[in-house]
Image 1 (cartoon, rainbow, N blue to C red):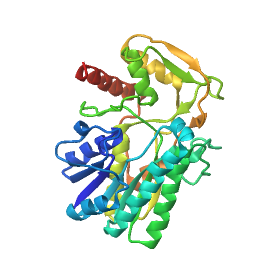
Image 2: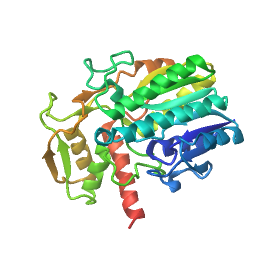
Image 3: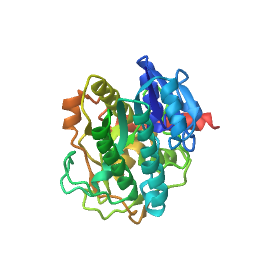
Image 4: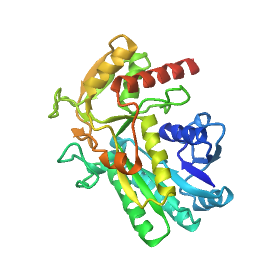
Length: 328
């Protein structure tokens, strides 16, 4: 049996592939390399270049590699871009996910793990937010992911398909062993942007809004180390293979850090300050979103190991320096 990882050449996907290969699993990656890097895929895994929307290709991979589980990362992830290009996001994140789910059903794949997002909550009324709280996405990105959750829910009722949807909060950091990290050019992740600025790859960075109702006026987010997030996927895979039913879990630490908190952590890692400019709020950005992840800890046995902003930033900064040297 093998595991199909879509988007396995991307940031989180490449870390997932490393963890699965480290554990001795047979892994095949499907990625169109629009944002992913072929070199980021662990050499033990097989890389197939192609699109998840190609049902014939996906079905052939499922059959040829005896796939019993799909871990689905592929998609578009930039919230402001989803506001300006909603139809593109509904195509990449919803329509193509529907095609992949259909391929899984036709191929008899019993287990499906989906990369969802805290953006399905929008501006939550209660913080930390729980899985059963109201779902009111405020961006097409969040809506596109919620629609895929609903498709999985309905498909699991009609077919022999159990799924876990993991709602990510803010994923950051890099493999502590230095094997992978956030490598996508023009990425918008706050910690990556700050690390690039600290290393002189950018002249400055911007803080989008300083008038939120938070302790310093900037947005609060729950930052989770990518290795801990991958650990939740490994636990979810074991949960499904051991007969667990379809479920949805938050993945976060349950504490929020502001944009300026992150800037301070990057300045500590770099050993010097850098230029930070004020900018207007971005559309689709909630003021504060923090996870209640008690359910994942209890049901999956998930035990995060890297709940420390300075450690998260330290690994991200080390990876950014590695990229700088690699591209020099």
